[in-house]
Structures are given as structure tokens and as C-alpha cells.
Image (tube, rainbow, N blue to C red; front, side, top):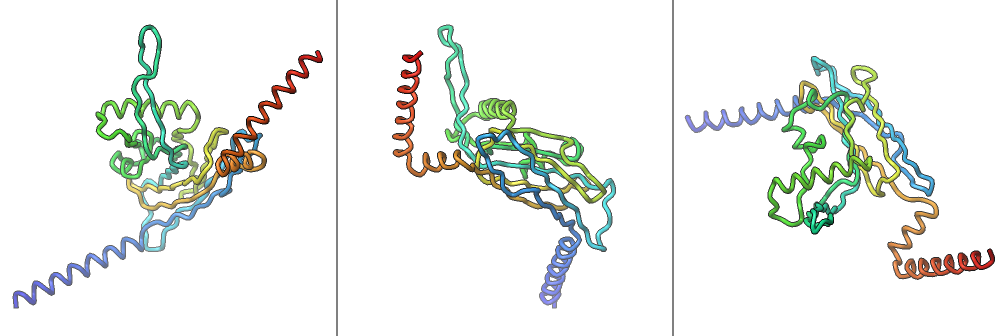
Length: 262
């Protein structure tokens, strides 16, 4: 009898958990968003561009409106790269590269756009889990057992360089709420962006917790003459090298002719 009662209690507990999980999932907010363009083409006169993210936060009739409304954070990441970060030291009166750390899986582009300052939206645990914000980023060195203080110093230097190049940024007012559930944001892409696949992760916060999210994808690629040269250099580097040498020789010969005639 005791065994039957325990089994029944266990089944009822499992059923209750499933009901609560289903109820929670059905009441979760849904994010419906899109990009103004899913393809960015880089030509010889490319000076940068902007993409617009626009979307809405949907909830069913059973979901109670959240007190304080919603906050939206858009995190944009570019293709992953391997980056070598060097530190200079003064040697015999000269500044020379001494130490170096190679970081793996570093986004070529990283931007965080939000309705207000991140400290007002969520907490550090959530940000670290999803990599939201420059202070939440953590890149692993290829070298292995690098002291944490050294890793942080090199990573901070790399991030500062990315910021100076316009490739990393935080915009605490980069998302505009046009209504309690409608939002819009502009993604600024500089002229020196890398080609590849980019992701725009949209996080909706309510009560300092993520209540909905969606991921959008867009691609950056070269087009025109630059695309043909790029493809030739990667697909047939020998031919590209020979042509580059021939062009250099021709340019030198032409410059010699012009100077002699003058």
C-alpha cells in the first residue's frame, strides 16, 4: 500500500511539473522581428551602411502584461576570427613587440544595442551566459595556461583596438520602443567590416529576466571587380600572384616611359 501510494505521488508530481512547464511555455512572450536587408554587398566605393531591425513582442490572452514594460537588447556578431594580440616593451631604447597571445573565436564585429543602459535591464549572470556586453566577453587563448590577469590585459587591449576601428560598440539608446510592444534599431556597419555571416540576436527583458528572444541572420559579401579579385586570390593564388607581378612590372615600365618623355 505504501509502495502504491509513493508511486502514485511520484506520477502526480511528474504530471504537475509537466503541466507547469507547458503552461509556462504557452504564456511566454514571442518575438517577431526582421531585417531591412539580409545581404550587404561590398563594392570598391563602399563606405559603410546601416541595417534596420524592426519587430514586435507578442503575448497571448492568458499572459499578464509585465509591470515596467519591456526592454530590448540586440547583440550583433560578425564571423569568428583568430586574432594575435601583441604587447610592446621598451628594449635598448626601442619599442618592440615582446609578448603575444592568440585568441580563438573572436567576432570580427560586435555591437550591443539596447533601450537603455545594460545595468538597468538585467544582471551580470544573464549577460555572461549569453555574452551580452563588452564586459561579458571572454575569449580563450590558444596558448593554454595563460594567467587570468594576463589574459584580461591582452583581451582588454584587443577590445580597445576594435573599438577604435569602429568594429566593437555599445549603444545604450540604440533600440527605440515605438510602442509598449513595437521596437526598432539601426545596425551601423563600418567600411572595414569583414565578409561572412552575421547574426543579430534579439533579447526581450521583463523584470530583469529574458522573456523572449529571436535570432536573425544576414550576410556581408564582396561584389563587382573586388569580388572577382578576392575569389581569384583564394581559389587560384598562383595565378593571382603571377598577375600581380605582371601588373607591377607594367606599372613600373609605364612610369619609366612617362618620366623619360618628360
